[in-house]
Amino acid sequence: MPMNRVHQRICSSEKWAQRTREQLLPWSLAGVELGDDVLEIGPGYGANLRVLVETVPRLTAVEIDAGTVALLERTWGDRARVLHGDGAQLPFPDASFDSVVCFTMLHHVPTPEHQDRLFAEARRVLRPGGWFAGSDSRSSLRFRLLHIGDTMTALDPATLPARLERAGLTDVTVTGHPTGRRLRFRGRRP
Image (cartoon, rainbow, N blue to C red; front, side, top):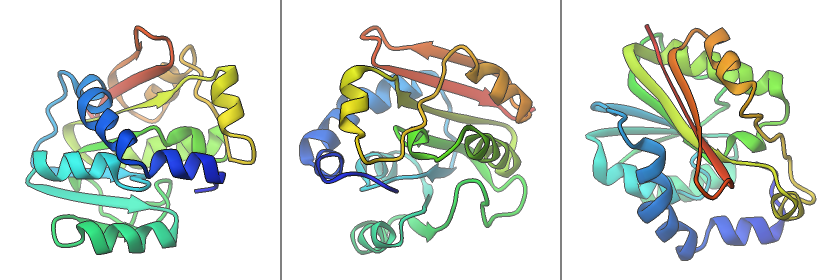
């Protein structure tokens, strides 16, 4: 999870966790039935995880950064299964989860092709009828400045629906936030 120090500080802050709990997750997941078994790909410092662990019966998180995995395991390991891994190569059998979610992390995936592999893996591990849902930031000058020295592969809302459909998802929607600073997406495994 290549992030510069400013970005790390923001994403690990209590202010970001509060914003996630009060604004980001309610908007991102409005109308999505998560079910009992949920996988979060790329939980980062755990702002989303701390909300999800209170919301769903069983939560699994897959994080690519080993140091962050250790932090999450120490903090949430008694309430969520936290694994070190790549969302584009998930260590689970087909149809393992009722839903798969990811929030404000896809722009840290190094290439669109790697993002597409992550979408296909999310679909693979979903049970039939399950949702892949989440949100991410939209590119702007401020967003690009925050990511100096980071990996940044912003999603294009115009091409994202077709990419999710190519991954095998149906009922795909991509919606912009009223502020224009983020987008949410969702698709269902048939």
